[in-house]
Image 1 (cartoon, helix red, strand yellow):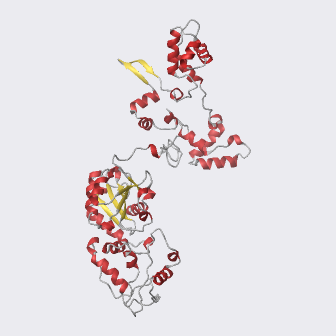
Image 2: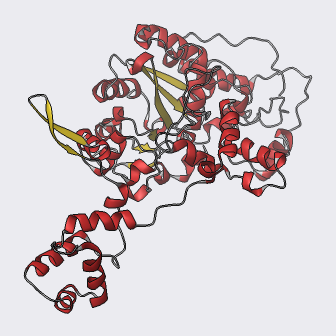
Image 3: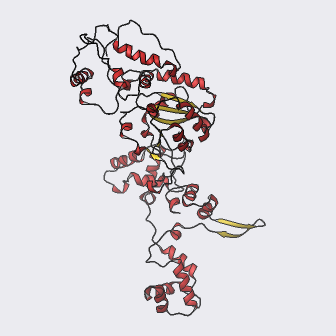
Length: 487
């Protein structure tokens, strides 16, 4: 009954306390017993004041049962008080209130009367002030938010504090059962709630330590990931999720590598843990160990076999907190891009694996601003060619020229990885010069208008791409003699 008073539905409240929906309905609404079509007995709904936990200083129903037994056994007031551990005056007042002349003590009537005498919560200002309630109702029907209403009331009635409210009072008036503010409006007949969220009751706030684990098997939290994952300083860490189709009946798996932003799509014949387990292992088993270090997923039921996935791929699976999509930022951004190809509310099962691969290749060959206009396919292919963690830096920067030869290679700035050095913030030319002074070598600053004569940097990058062209499933063009523009 306490949950119902907060605005919970009967089903939600019954599930929270661990009873069936029928029991919750009986408690909340009461029930009738029929025999041959006639009502022979009715049970009234529970009063939330009768079932709530009260202070121990008041007599409980169990104590009243004991009082009734002792009165029937002709015990005196002091004897009853001694056995209950109460003051004799408390027992005397209880008997004086609930025993009529010539009648015995009736404990259940006494308990109901005591419940009725308990202090009720005072009425809200909206209930005591019909003018204020009418004004708030008019503004809510115009889709004003509670914050906008309270500011308007203070401006409209500056000298009448009785017409002021706080936004929480309006929310409570909306969320209470049977609220008069829950009604459709002429311009929005499809919605009962005046709130933008459309909620008719307050969302439950559970304590994190009171929540049950999502899976029976032990889970690794996203907060247990190494530091290198958070700052994108290490490749091979993936963020995964599902984009769901019409009526939750179809889905496509999406995987994004955090460093290169490379995307892989999973064709799922069914939306269950078995289909995801088989498809994910088949799709990711071709990667080397340094490009499959971890997987981060939300707490969807499709990951029920996460321990089997970890054993098959050799990479741990980390889970985000509940309702925390910002802990998978790259994947959430990619899901938004994929909605151009797979609109919401459409049937995703009609897309073939070949179509998913075409979408995947098109997305991976699109330059990204966060990668300084490089493509995810180029950066990931360079990572695929070498296990060294600095391969991305070596590929993006020109190779060392032969001794005695000036370098005309182009300095390409590194992609943002979450932690930028002071030199990198001052610009790629200054950062590159500082790195050259640190390693003890000198190279001439390349001219922005001079063509690339030696082709060293381009040759290294193209060699990495050509060596692994089969991974992307698309041909790689031969290097041309076109000059490389400086960034």
